[in-house]
Length: 226
Image 1: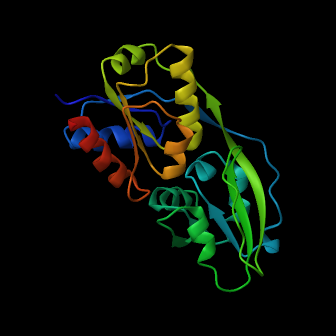
Image 2: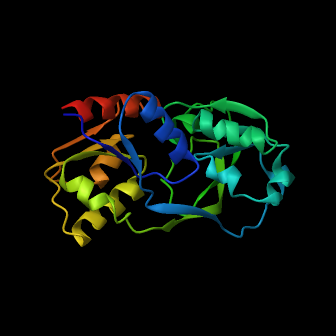
Image 3: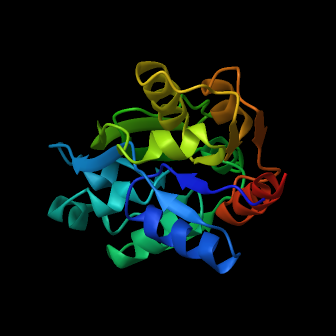
């Protein structure tokens, strides 16, 4: 019997993932554990930087009108969704990564002054020698309680799609709060760090072989059939 898929990511990515899951024939349910909101921030002098790096489309969706003062800087984006959001905000995208934001930075072979636009919670990055990086927080994830309809689905067996370590930790905490047994639940994570953050006790907990929604949904489809 095919198990249902529960997608915990917030909008605007949630709708895209649900549509892609349904196109694969999966029974998918959206249950975001957070909602993105802008954070007041001070825009730096663009002349002090050579490029912007961004690990989420939310940096451009939540950055506000002040982003217009930085559109002269090229953007290096973690993936195509982030690149699309940058273009929609008026930026030119100079590069798009595929293996996480660290791989984007590692690709720089000459000294460069980077401005990182990100969320309140973000992974630490190692900057190559000769390069510098300043950071600005432009959005935060506001926690949301688990949808009341989800526990019954989980107790009957389900696959949970996780796009971030923060969502993984929140989901594990909600399961503990609501006394939901982890044994019938399978985890499909966008990367190994996300799976680790979800903890132990799940029926299965696997990471996609590549950090893309396509590969993550392929993994989820397999788990839903197990």
